[in-house]
Amino acid sequence: MQRYIERSKAGEIQKSLQHNPVTALIGRRQCGKSTLARHILQNNKDALFLDLGLPSDMRKLADAELFLGEHTRQLICIDKVQLRPDLFPLLRALIDVDKDRRPRRLCV
Image (cartoon, rainbow, N blue to C red; front, top):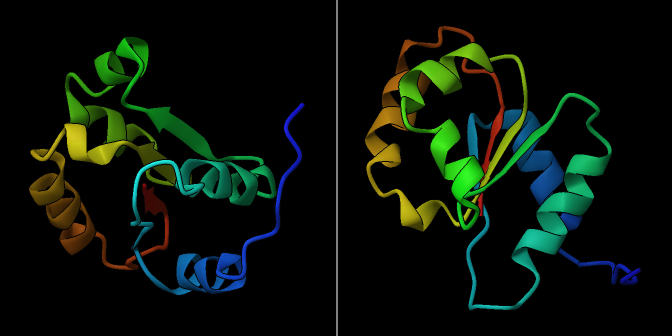
């Protein structure tokens, strides 16, 4: 099992997740974004992790509006979100109609 190396930004990301409807982790390839996201999600029992590099997870978003609408109460992490640039306007629209603007999305 791979040992987790504590990241200095983890606290900032946790804080952002508590206050913002979307938090994005950006950085160069292979710098630990997905590992950090998975580590953060460990503490949230109701979190959902989608890796869009996996065909099975990509299929879950065949009707992204329906899928994301069914999981509005969960923290959803969309890894490799850049593979589905069409999701960005949808995420914006879903956030705009959410009166509470609940924090719940993590895009990596």
